[in-house]
Length: 305
Image (cartoon, rainbow, N blue to C red):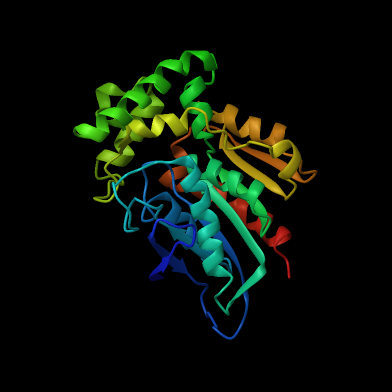
């Protein structure tokens, strides 16, 4: 694995950080298919995204896990911004880099993501058809989650209060200390269900905590998050092959269902892994291996030379 930095060409002067994983016996004189892996909201490249990158590289891929702009080891102020439009553009910024690497076959690039990273990868695939295949693991459409709740049962109109709170936060930020919101529970007792209690455990205990992943973003971002749709225009423009991997017990499963339903692609598949919840696919070996067992043949078929 090689850690690199490179300029994000989308503006703002951001320098992005990424870990490039290469296959065993890597030969810089050859050209390899590549997979860009987007991390969950509140995560960093050293967590779930990096785990999947390392495992996919074992199967012959250049696999790159990166830190979002304003997060992790990437630059940008203020730290921890979670602007979904920037997160989407970050995926394409990494592809910009890949097209300059002589050992990457620019005609065989795929995108995938975990949790909100899956939604961002989907949105990037809708916009950027250099992406030849899309895969998601425990996908979250972060806008739909803020509008409709973890289980999808809250009416969108109920999120008006979040928009108003975000607007007030922007005014507050201009004259006082920035207001923050959690992207996962900051305390176990704040978790509304067992699945999100596991999210607290993942991010805030030795299970997988990382100093670059404090778990919050800014309330000002609600003015982007609430109205964002990661699957916007998927019915027309998401024509690439799509694979979603999701647990049968995941409260977030409805968002993977929605992606499959809305994608224009005629080559779309959902693999439901029995017994897994949303968090199972972040680091639990049985479920990560089950996801890899679906991802590898998918990418092998769709990125064949």
